[in-house]
Image (tube, rainbow over all chains, first blue to last red; front, side, top):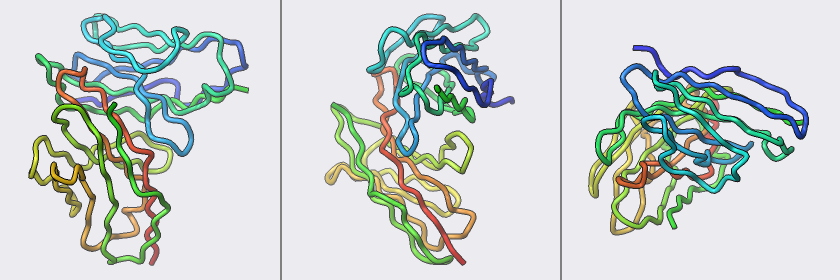
Length: 115
Length: 113
């Protein structure tokens, strides 16, 4: 089975620009979650997608948005980039059945630098 | 709200030393508890987990016991190796809460020869 893959691995953007990060979920998983990990910090939950709809959101502004596609892959979009958006963005996929998430698996992340 | 507190690092040990990394949590409800490891330049890997009180998670010589009475989930290993050098994250997840994970700030472990 394939794991979670994210692209690109590194990205440099200018303040005010927009960025799209991509994630392919592990085979058999139907849920994707996105996390932001600032340098020296633990990951912070951005949002989760299940059945192509947002299924929970952390304390992030609306300029952070996402999509989930029928094949369960996902995109994270960030508009109007700010310097503080510089971080490692992690995608995690899981199998949601009822109220439970099984097999939470993380990708290697996309390192975003905003200059 | 839910939160996880870990001991600050870095923790520097000699090879074959005993490791303890403390983790305590605050949660509404009955969380599952996790330890993740992050090697330089990589994402997170699940190290071990426990889903209910008194459960012991174990993997690769690492252990942690879910202590509800002290709201703790301390990570231990009897004999560390240089290859264990990484950042370790304690996390909790709540059933019915979308199962989002709440992480601690991480503890860097350095193991020297």
